[in-house]
Every structure is written in C-alpha cells, then in structure tokens.
Image (cartoon, rainbow, N blue to C red; front, top):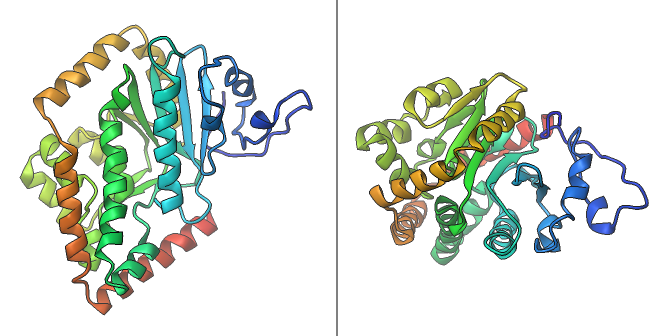
Length: 319
C-alpha cells in the first residue's frame, strides 16, 4: 500500500457493488474494497459516510478512517454527525462474536492538514446571535465523541492518530484522545484560541494537565505558538516520528510490531485510564465555561476569528 492520504479517484470494475464504487481511494488501496465485504457483521453504512472514508483491512484487523471534509478541514456539524455515526457503527459491527478489530486509525485526506479544529464560521454566527445553547450543544457533541474515543469505544482495540499536516485547536485536542499518535516531521500543532480571546474548550485542559501537569499545560494554551512534531515528541505527546511522506509506512510498521503485544497495550491503556480517570461530565463543564467566555468576545475578537477562518480556507484551497 502506498501513501493512503494522497486521495485519487480509483476506477472500479462493473463487478464491484455500489458500496465499493463510492470510495475515493488513495494509491494502492484497491484491495481494501474487497476486504470490506469479507466481514458480514460490519454494517454496510460504515462504508457510506459522507465525510469519512472507512476501509477495513482483514489481515491486520485494522479499520483505517480518513477525514474527507466537504469544506474547510474543521469539525463542522456535518462531520461531527459522521463521527457519531462512525462510532455507533463500529461498536455495532465489531467485538465478541462479530468482526475482529485490533487497531483503529484516523488520518486526513486534506493535503497538509489533519484538522483545523472548531467550526469558526459557526462560532461567529452563534456568538453574534447570543446562542449559548447552540455553543454548548456543539461543545458537548465534540466532548462526547472525544470521550468515547478515549475509552477506545469500550472495545479491545488500540487507537492511533496519524498526522501528516497541521493539527490546530480542536484538531490537536481530538488527537489527544488516541492511545498513540504518529506524526510526520513537518507536521505542526497548536492551540490558537487565545489569539481571539478564547481558550480550547474541548479537552485540552483536562487531558494535557493529566499528561504534562498544569504548568506546562498553561504554557501550551497561553503561548499562541505553533509547535513542531519534534517538540511534541520531546514532550511525550507524540509516540513516533516519521519522515515527510512516510507517515503511513510508519503507521503500518507500528501495527506490525504491535501485533504480538496487542493485549498488553490494550490492558496497559485500561490501567492508565484507571490511574488518571476523566469523566465526560468534567469535559462538559469546561465546555460550558468555554461557551460563557465565547459570549463575552468583543467585535475585534470576532474579526480576528474571521481572519483566521479566512486564512485557513485559503490554505486549504491552495493545497
């Protein structure tokens, strides 16, 4: 399999059913079309999500998922809806007596971008409308998805985040919910919310303070700096570095080398969750504080948010 994140249209023969022909595949992914159909317990809908490409690899028992957002690569309500359905369909199709799943990988097909995070255009609209309920609902949806991922969907699986570009704001927060993160050198990370008067409201405080302590967490949140993959590796937030263009190969190598110790990794992560518990309600409370803070933003803050959203859109379109 070559670089999966370089999406290209792959022609499918007439013998392939409608489910299979809907894929937009990366180079070398054609064999996965047939492996998707080998496990009848896997719901067909899992392979028909609008903004997520999902591919099942039978020999490694790995579910590869790639974000394929229709607009700017951020967590829009439609993408959140796909993630909610994705999680439900995975728990429905895999587990004891069903299809076997050992590794769950999430990457992105957006060139140079893992995810820019929250939907800044939506935030501006909700803030101008004074819609606290809308802000809280959005934040709670993000946190519920993140918390389920932190629990590995209550399945005996190892979750892996694959980063081949920029992971900012909520995109960075989402990555922190994975058991392991593999990033290419050249990938960047940051929490830019402070530049428009906010703070990251979907997990950064709760997760980073447990991993790094409160002092380092505050440094990351308040610095408004962009950090390299190497810096994140030195902090222990990234578990493996890959050369540019080699992220997929590094991920596959990690899966191969982890296969024999899979059970140990799964139970070690369960033990870590016992040692450092994080309840969903804690995430929800922080999100509610975030919503209250958002409603206090001034017009100049919203203009900064608007400029950042426009810059992200230009970057995505250029890529």
